[in-house]
Amino acid sequence: MNINILAIESSCDDTSASIIQNGQILSNCVANQEAHKLYGGVVPEVASRAHQANIIPVVDMAIKKAGIDKKDLSAVAFTRGPGLMGSLIVGVSFAKAFAMSLKIPMVEVNHMMAHVLAHFAEAPKPTFPFLCLTVSGGHTQIVMVKDYLEMEVLGNTIDDAAGEAFDKTGKLLGLDYPAGPLVDKYAKLGQPIFPFTEPKVDGLDFSFSGLKTSILYFLKKQIKTNPNFIQENLNDICASVQTRIVSILMNKLKKAVKQTGITEVAIAGGVSANSGLRNAIVVTGKELGWNTYIPRFEYCTDNAAMIAVTGHYKYLKGEFVGQDVVPMARMKL
Ligand code: KG4
Ligand code: ZN
Image (cartoon, rainbow, N blue to C red; front, side):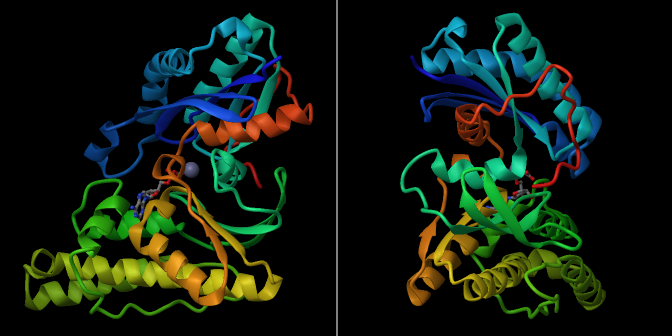
């Protein structure tokens, strides 16, 4: 009999549903929320209401696209955390009601574990153990992945996440939210001529708040003498910011490889869509003899396919949760 799992992702501002059959992704539908552009960041209450409006059409679409029938579903997997409480509640409540009505089990999924397991949505798949740099709007981690469901966090950000560094500096430059993809776009047209210093942080941990402050002071100083400094130098500023963020990430990743001796190296999360980072990991990998893995774009940013893959492996182990499950905004990996 087929194992068909419906997966729901609603941790931040994307509502997504996916169907996985025996470990193969059949559909992955995402409804993005444009409203946050107006506010320059995700507004939790707005996100939560949009999830409520989007979740039923997105789930319907995922089931339809997969070409299966609701009654053939074996389980519902859902993101329990980490994320915004109001957003998580919508997905968790939906999963509970759906599972109850179909009398099928539920599987809880950690969003950060799912970003890592996005690598198993399709080939080429890394072999265990591998290192994964997970870089998103909320997290920056180096994870040692020993098996599908066995992961150890080796390094973490001590302040802002890499995605936040992109979004917050982009905001200083007057770019729309999320600014990461726009900084990436302009960086391609410029040169990294402005030096922003690399923070000194122990071990495999990261820090990005100092970079944001140094960019703020740099811009303030330049604007004093030239009010049009940002407009005239946007591409070069973006290239400089991106180059520094990428070098901070790559230096720690190189250190992690040296420390562990593991040369299977992957990147995951929204920031792994960044062209500078994608390029850096390929070039460094070739130079240092690593096998590198970069997910397809749709599996980098938030998506339910990654929840489906994780749900599949947890289903095989019989790791189910009951109707008393509640979301966990600060769920740890
Ligand atoms: O993983 P994700 O979709 O959501 C979270 O779990 O946070 O990551 C979103 C983050 C945002 O900060 C966004 O600006 C960043 O990923 N991002 C990028 C790019 N595409 C998305 N950052 C830099 N360059 C990109 N091309
Ligand atoms: Zn994410």
